[in-house]
Length: 66
Image 1 (tube, rainbow, N blue to C red):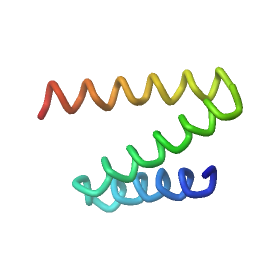
Image 2: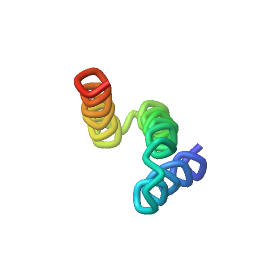
Image 3: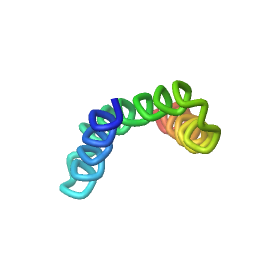
Image 4: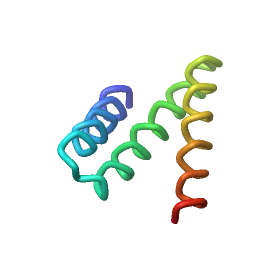
């Protein structure tokens, strides 16, 4: 789970860096949800918090910018 989520997030960074913004969001979302699942499984509040904040920021951007 950790490796898959990490690779997905790296894919999101790469997609952003190379200008493939359409692909960046799905990669980031997969990585974010993966790490959130890891945080919940480990009961690690720091991992849970940072990924919940990232999810709220991502969803807010999607709602306000469509």
